[in-house]
Length: 493
Image (tube, rainbow, N blue to C red; front, side, top):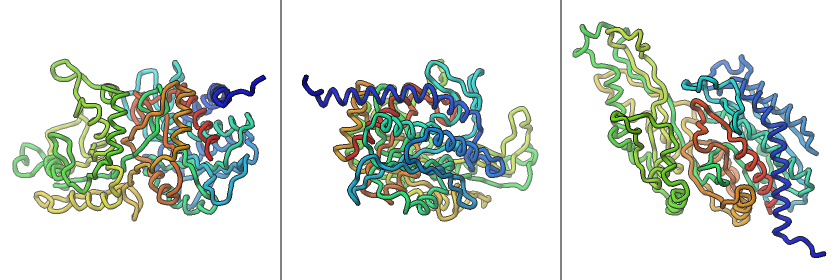
């Protein structure tokens, strides 16, 4: 009898990993995530009393208990709590194959367990803390972004070990402050650096997918500056009929200040220091991705009806420009307001102040802290009417703003392994896409481990709506991603 061909062996390996992932998700991961979604473990930025409430500790402890219950050979697991900081889950699993010293033979797997706040607009039968599994979609806050990561990472390692497939050493870092900009992460990385070892591959499961039809590799992430811009003109509200025309509106002053930052007609950020040159390779990748996704780049969003009854329109219907706008160009969003009464209680009163929560997304190559300092100066200097204008950036002192990330050049082995996994589990080649969101860890790790390769991917595909209403986790995609992560880890040289 002839020996099986390499292709047949690869097909059998992919099938065995897929079977294990299917079973793991159906029997263990979905039930665990159902419990996880029910816990309103909001990130510290959205729950100042997080330590007192104990919900972040609960989801970290629940994940730790689940991981320990899998009994992976040699697993060492620890919940680490530095004073005054959110907890981190750290695990260390020894290699099942020898590695040469200094070979960069450790895989670091990353995820987070903290969540964004509730938001409104959920479907009547859904809610942020009421999980519902329907037609392969697990609804609720945090499952896809990205509570599943710790569970999927362990299941991928477990799949390899149960099949007797040799693999490198794997360590896991699961934080609970990512949705607040990961302010505690640098301290944990510094504390854990001697234990992390020589990182050769980072697997980050906190990103997204262009569709659910293939494996997607994230090639870049934007940075971010967020904070509160407040304009104060009076010490108390006064009758608008008596004062308007003499007292300038705090809202108009705020609009005036924002005009320094943004062209309201186009959305372009005016200061050139918030822009960067887009690498030619990323433009070419955007063209290739646009050819795959087409108009779905913009049609996938829940547009309202326009004034004439038609659908509201995006800033551009060109898929290439749309991709570049959301990944390599700075954009301002207003995500919250203060100082406004509800419409039912809005009398004829000129309000004393207006405050906006700003979210400024930065291109991957713009330093987040430096941008934060420049933004504060831009908004506060030379206030109109000598009003009190303040901008308070989010973050700890000395670490304001998050820097984005541009992926290092792919090693041939990693590109081949991911493409093989995509073909094996989806029947389509690997896709490349930049993401408009921010994962502060990536720039930190690239600085600390400049030789490491980066596999950044995730389950946040079309309509999954992280941070918004009706957020869901696409379970069939999660299964295939778990098997793909196992396959890539096994292929690491």
